[in-house]
Amino acid sequence: MPSLCGSSERGGWWVAFAAPSRRPAPGASHADAVRFHASRLREARERLWLVGMACLGVGLSATLTVPFLWRLFAWMGERAGVSTLVWQTGFMFFFIAPALVVSVLLLARGTHLTSNGEQSR
Image (tube, rainbow, N blue to C red; front, side):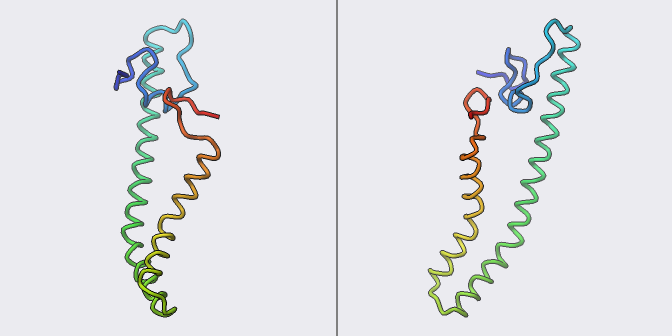
């Protein structure tokens, strides 16, 4: 089982994800290796903070815009004279389509991670 603190031979899985190509210099002293790993942990913490802020922003914007979009689709469906099921289906497609497009693009590019933390190409 991988160590969560990054003290195993390859480091924790999240440390390998944070900076997979950087390793301490061969023959580096213990203090240098500790500094190196501390800098990697600091960088990983900064990335996770940015990811957290991005998730918070997306969540807040979705919370504020989804009710407005729901009413807009209801109004457009009423004006167009379509059934409730049609405009609700249109809303769900509009809501889910961006995530599906991004997922397909990322999979086509091959940026998903393998089990050992390396990128597959």
